[in-house]
Image 1 (cartoon, rainbow, N blue to C red):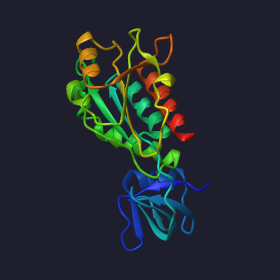
Image 2 (cartoon, rainbow, N blue to C red):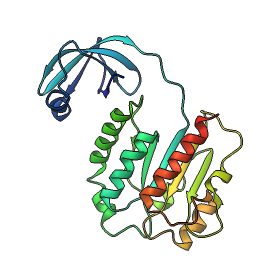
Image 3 (tube, rainbow, N blue to C red):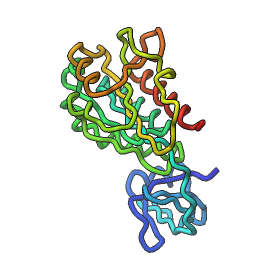
Image 4 (cartoon, rainbow, N blue to C red):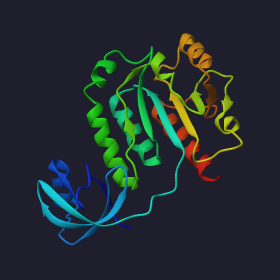
Length: 240
């Protein structure tokens, strides 16, 4: 199976990958002139051939536009900020699983300082999303947003909205899924911080129409809960 790379744009049948990404292609992946790969400009996917390969610039020439892949459910992951090594691992794995958007959330119990530091990390998170997308051969990159305060994040629009809550009373994730599902659906998942939701936050997301769900009797780390919940959503919508 051919590797797939993302490019800024395809113009006149050509596309460039420059800088550190080009160095990775030439030094690590050893791309050579004449080799064929797939490239995506985040709109279309093309079969392309390497026309030149330099350390700082790899030039592709498109051969043909490939057929679009089947539509997939649009999943927006609204995840409270946690320690950045765990948060970045979550970005990588949920990107591989197919999320369409990621919204970092500043919750009441978000560790102090993470909200300010997040402003400088967004571009790094987008690079992680790019690399994970290439690994997973995605057609489109996930949209990774700037961090939002909790009250703005809960205003997320989606046909189905689920919030993971460790407090007893929520339905199991599987039981809460709608009986009728289609690829045109939009689903939002809200994941709390390491300290859990406050009562005030719980009242807010319930009032905003989020359905409280649980992944089982054990208490999961935030990143584990996010990956498990996204997996369930993707699998549930895949079978229909």
